[in-house]
Image (cartoon, rainbow, N blue to C red; front, side):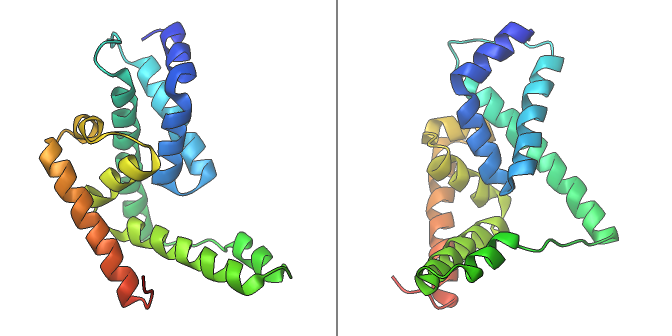
Length: 174
């Protein structure tokens, strides 16, 4: 691919790719790195872009593969030397005086769902993120993860079921 094609792709669906990266990484800085790596990798390859066969799926697939590779690296490194972050946003929210309790419970529910999704097996996690947060169709997801549409539907169903069960186990009710 050349720079003009990459620029056209960024204009056409760069926002969707960035949103997907953000949901995969759950961190803005990591998402920006993944986004840049995705388009850099596409620029480095000798592919010719076929605009008739959903080029957006190619970039979703590239981002997904790079993210998987980074997760593997992180897991290897984390077994050697674990590290952790402090959540500054949570601290700022607790210091705010406006409707603290309601905002806290809402934020806690969102964080709980995010943690549940992050702990799901990758085979459920990626289709859920693509379907609900990146607005991809089942057929597009099937192309991205290289599985049949029936498998994608099954994984979405099972993923929703796992999230519901884990929320109920954690004390959340409908």
